[in-house]
Image 1 (cartoon, one colour):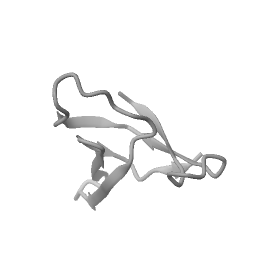
Image 2 (tube, helix red, strand yellow; image 1 turned 120 degrees about the vertical axis):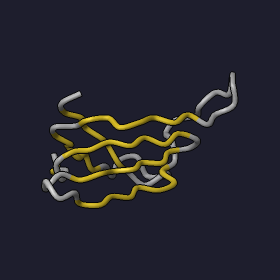
Image 3 (cartoon, one colour; image 1 turned 30 degrees about the horizontal axis):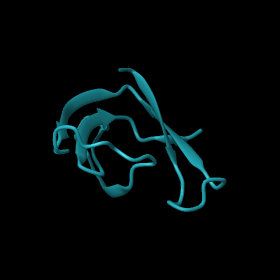
Image 4 (cartoon, rainbow, N blue to C red; image 1 turned 90 degrees about the horizontal axis):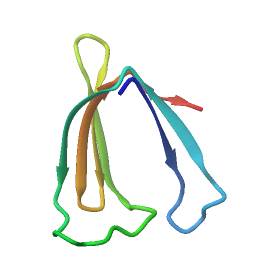
Length: 80
C-alpha cells in the first residue's frame, strides 16, 4: 500500500470530519482480536492511536480500533 486516507470524526457528530492522507505506507502487522463471527459495527471507535518518529524521518504508527490493532510505517499525515 502506498497511500491511505483515514477519515476521523466525533463518534456522534458525522458532519464534522477530517480526512488525513498517509503516504509511503508500509504495513507492519494487523492483529484482529474479534471473536469469530462477531459483526463489527461501524463507525469503529478509536481506542488508541500512537506513534513514534524513526531515525529515517518516517513514523511508526499503531492504530487501535474496536478489537483490531494495525501497525504501519508512513510519512507524517497531511490534512486532505
